[in-house]
Length: 376
Image (cartoon, rainbow, N blue to C red; front, side):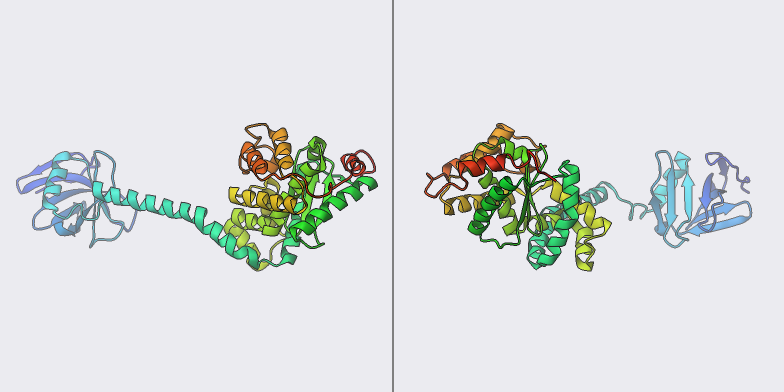
């Protein structure tokens, strides 16, 4: 006859019929804890106060995850949530000796290694999708985006650009505007772009210039103020026209916006909050890839060569603004190649002037003063 079970799972209980110890049993149907005793025969018998609660074949018993000092068991033929907890070391040793398939589904070191291996493989897959899959999708989708869609994207980001950079005023002093229009038209024609391009000089001290989808190019007065000749500004504007020609702004939005932006693209949500967030973040920071920046520089070099103007001045302007190491806070240079490398390339591609000056001295002076008065 066995002694009645106690609430102490480690309490001993010896009988002449074999080792029996108190343990804790959960039947899987309720959260009640049953203090039980175990009997070993051809199967493991689990007895509670009211008699037998379960009988588990040894071959069906499996180890479950448990803290140190506790053996937690389950049974493949028992309810899914049924558990047996054993804290007595001698009793746990007895059970382990009889259950030959105890660790069949429990991850040992090899199993853990497999789990870790699959986790690493999953992480690599995600990284691969981010680094290769999304850019590939952006490259494939960009040519399919209608120009009308790009113009709407540019309109969404336009106010954000002016707000973020404190560029609420468009500089439109008539003489300066005329000179700026003349310079842009020469560059636009040399770049092979149509007359839908819209340009403006914005009144802000930030030395910056960039293009928005849909054909908008902004030159900030902070960059114009640091320029020493028209060729310096012309090279920068030609670079931005290169971004427009390659549609880098739209590609950048698809890349940075990821799944959410693609969904918005498919369903036409270009004026809602999701598009606004992605447009303001991606377009304003202008975080183009290094390849995109190099390609835009290539366009700038080609345009200046067609106009018979030198390419080195653009590199000199950028180097004057950033210094040798560059300044990541200036969005015109974000993710660009190093400024000194760009200056070297512009110098290597430089040719003696063979075409007329892009602006006269009077026109250049008027452009430099475009923000001095008459701005709205």
